[in-house]
Image 1 (cartoon, rainbow, N blue to C red):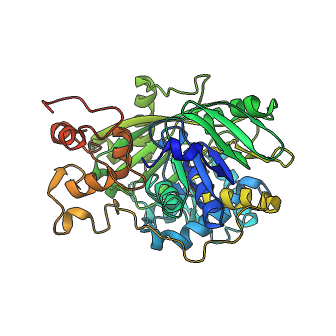
Image 2: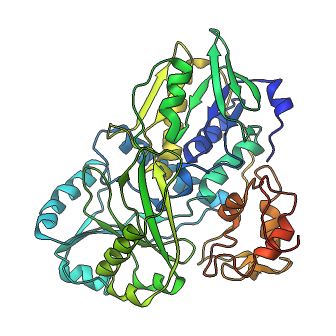
Image 3: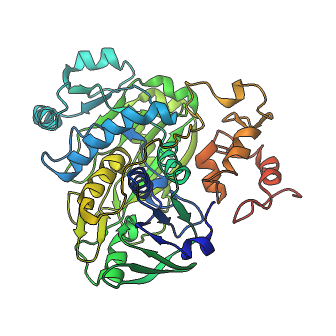
Length: 467
């Protein structure tokens, strides 16, 4: 990581962003590109280590967001900006489209209202489908389909390269990153915030709380007020081996409820097939425990949707937590007097909305006077391409050889992820940057070589072998 606490503590930043999730990364980018001096503070050893480490990796259009909501506006703006910048940042896009499938007459009765809601949200290309039309598009669908509609512009993306790209662009244009720095207190003297962290004091003219699962607690600690309460919602996922991806072309969505978008079946950018998430309320904000009975039910549901899944192997299982609150909409609040912004309650749509959310927050702070002018010629980093259907590094000369054969990760990709302005700080971070050890063997064959390559370069060393 490029954090240098000694240097950071000697500066007064225009903006300090608390939280290195997808929202924090997008905020750091937006404020930096618009001319502000930014520091991003993350308590973990690497970014994307909280809620953003686990999601469905879908670029949503916002067709089912509450019309007129802040969430709908941020998703629409975020979607548009992603489509505008992705080529320059070398970010993948699987143009799958989505299909909302009704499995009962009661669900089928809800489809016209959902399509009307989509059109209210500006998603006016949704198309109703009869059962026969749905089956022509998705021949592997199980029995029980009543009707469906198609959302052509719902796509699959890489859940990690996008936020990494946002933050890396911020860093390469002057932003700073301070990891392993938990915020423990702070005060505002009328002009400058003085944030106390486990790695020293950070001073900034504006504080943006994007702390995700701990956002309400940061509010209470820094401002003495709390306008929402985080209610962690666990999502468990099952990932199938790559041959299963041929079973579907679309993102298969259920009819959403007031609580959740429901269990999704879709391909991933990495060539697998994903089933999940669940939506389970819990108190614990830090641990998402996998439950065998729930995973069995998830596998059963996946096989009901695509019966042929029964013949395919599960590669991996994982779980994450969404920072839900007691409110349906995002909780973004500006305290202009204290030059403080809370960006809370960003649930499962955060990956899609991040760029729009960042722009909204920047607009809220437009009168604060920092950032004399947007950068005239910002650096545009090119991210490593990890999508299965794109040209990968293993196909290019001079890559140093393949280390992880399941995911075809090269030595050159690993070395690149361990260096530079956004170097991996942990094995989990290295996985998110390269997909090393995330294939069918889950690192059984490449762990020893990987341990040798990463020796002395991660905050928490890998174990195994004699290295």
